[in-house]
Image (tube, rainbow, N blue to C red; front, side, top):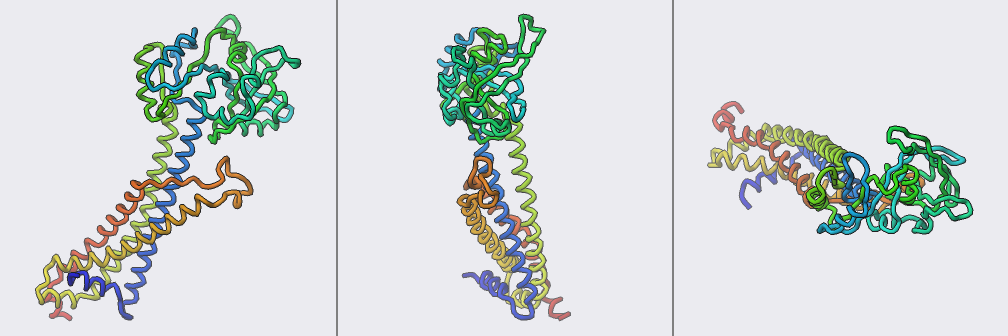
Length: 412
């Protein structure tokens, strides 16, 4: 062990008359630990929530959405076959979008109704795999049953808002189209609730419903046309490349967009929020770094004679700087290590703790807090803390190295 580290370690063990320095050092360690812990927990939780949100979006939304920029897609069977032949495409399904209002005996709610083909939609939208009972028969558009009603699948939250359950009857009020494209006439059609679905994404679960593709075409008087075509790809993170391939093959007026482009505003907002939280919580570490600088300044003042003696014995300015940099960085390392341990421990507790104990029920499809820690995030947090601590030691150490032994002995 070099003498710089030996002396620096001795300085950290303050005597009775230097108790104030020890108190400031302890407070600095606590501040750094709290800052690092808060950063790890907040970044981990925000990453976990973003990951859960992404899963919910991918469950209730296709990887690639194909539409015509000038209207609906006519003769969609031909387009579906072309898209299916593109490399990386796993499944394709057509759909029709219907904006309307759902009304039950107990409530009324605006809803986004999607007409789907039950034989292919489940291959594209994984959310439909979790639907209770609605297979091709439950979602049938055939009008030969006694009640002359088709089936509808509601999002769980939407069903709760309407106060309905499986088997109940609800009415869909929508603006359909007449023979003229310039005239819209109101359409009222009754449906029987055949099941529910959960996506984990509130925007979907509070406003979405599914009906048979043929029913939606009748409401909109679209005959053999659809609003768009949804595509599922093997690798969701290559969806943009495959969307480009679809655009290149079909050309205008067809336009394909990947799920990241469709939700870019949401993910950009979450990324900006995570960056803002990182900056704000780093301020805690910055405040603790000022405490390190203050304690080192006090240490330099208290050890002026020691510095002068070391210099007269041949210690170089570089060695003096090392002594005080080591003293400050030791505080930084201890605080960072404590914060890392506490942060990982708290993340583990959050991942296993049942939120229903606090909320009295399941916290919107999540029984525990989603936490996702990545090695790069942890390394970034530790690096930022240590760099801030190093910068805090630089100026006091530099001032200590500038001590003049002659002036010190003359005026002491």
